[in-house]
Length: 399
Ligand SMILES: Cc1ncc(COP(=O)(O)O)c(C=O)c1O
Image (cartoon, rainbow, N blue to C red; front, side, top):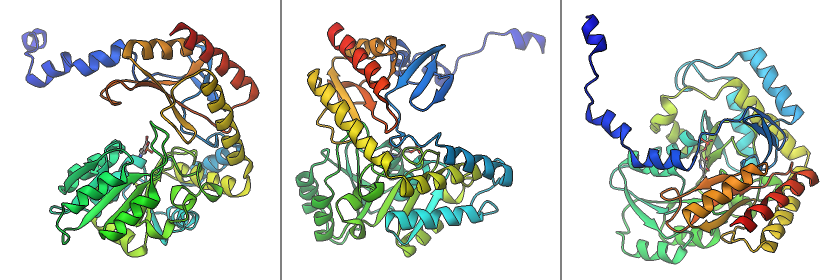
């Protein structure tokens, strides 16, 4: 017994894979992902004891620590506890889920909605809930990984079209059997690129070829449209999108996700999607924070105004510095550097100067598009902008 404890562990193929993984080596070499921040308040965070300006958060409206959001979360925690200890399909459903769903459905202009504990689950389920073997999912090649995972699990066939390219989508559809059930999946705002999805053209094509449409609007909600109702609202096309899915973890200052659509579609999803049936319900605190953020969005329009004023100011600064922003049209703004080493040092110089951004390299981005991903918040102040400008000038000069 004692001898077996001290015996050298025989390495199995999976352990060998873990020990020799090139991607993990790359991640560690370039300090990719998993940074630990010790504090956060407004746009300021602290890393290794150093205060920094957060310039990479998805909290576009900056509502995560709004007093009403904090108060709502605290009250929900006191009233309901930490969780509901079960799936919605079993013992986990509560009145606050139904209230939030009704609120979100009204906000998005849809009949019904289902909320889940992560945007990833919701976005996956927006495919697995509807697609099945023999169907075809046509998907923008830059779509979020949650949707790709949904496609894989659904067993449907997949056709990828070039990023934001309706002509390519049409040419793929022309080759498909008209009797096959088809789903088109796109994003409202592509989070790495900051591009707005070409919804009008794509919905015309969807109508012509009778496709079901899924719009992941994680980064459009709170940012585009009347009062931040999202990309479909921005184009005045809400009625023509079958499903709007997304996250509560961006402008809605919480964590969790949603799928919204017609009553029949949402009831079908509740019957079909395993991500929804077998996963514990959204927690009371998460639901309350998202609900309070919705209240703020509807009653304090100044946050949306500030977001776009800050976006304009930040873009002008990047243009002035001659930096390539991949034609971003939204507050999600990449700075394309191209070369991996250069991008890494650009990111590191920003860190050293007190600005937190995200470095992204292939395979996370297309080869030759190594970038530093930044995002503006409604909460960025003049003082933040001074620090950001100084840091960017420094990093650009050192490049
Ligand atoms: C486009 C998109 N869809 C879905 C998700 C998943 O949302 P969550 O982080 O809430 O799980 C994200 C999150 O990064 C996203 O950017």
